[in-house]
Image (cartoon, rainbow over all chains, first blue to last red):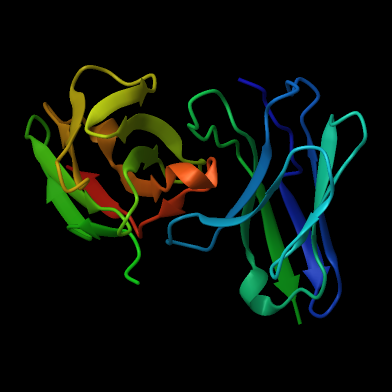
Amino acid sequence: DAKTTQPTSMDCAEGRAANLPCNHSTISGNEYVYWYRQIHSQGPQYIIHGLKNNETNEMASLIITEDRKSSTLILPHATLRDTAVYYCIVVSQGGKLIFGQGTELSVKP
Amino acid sequence: DAGVTQSPTHLIKTRGQHVTLRCSPISGHKSVSWYQQVLGQGPQFIFQYYEKEERGRGNFPDRFSARQFPNYSSELNVNALLLGDSALYLCASRSIGLLYEQYFGPGTRLTVT
């Protein structure tokens, strides 16, 4: 299973863009990058996923480098409710999600 | 539409006992997965079921077992509970047509004393 590396924690000012990096240098050609977040004491919430191209939805944007060895999740206008642990996951065969430690994002007023 | 539901919300057991946790997937979702989340760590994969068959198993002892019913709901069973089994147990369901986008329930908080 491809492993991911994320910073342990990050701070972001409310209203500013939050850019969360993730390294996945051993990713295989057919593996997707998924992002989930977990607000305290709740189940993880799906945010976005991508394979090669950049993706955008109502929650966030995902930028994947051309060599696919890293990606960045962008929350364009962070709010206090975006404070959570963000997980970058490379989906293994069969669809099981291998979570790492994630990045604890603190959005501050 | 209702999301993934899990029961009970909280549970306290003593060492050596048995526990059964229940999960109802989103309507139309045929795949259910179970995860264990110990405090301070990310969720760890335990089982995946699709169409009532086990399709994947994580690195957990045989004390952990699960099954999926014809209505696609699922049970996770843990025998001979240990203190280390104290965790948040999460259930996730997915529609096969949505690749690996999984929807998680709120979890069951198990405390073993």
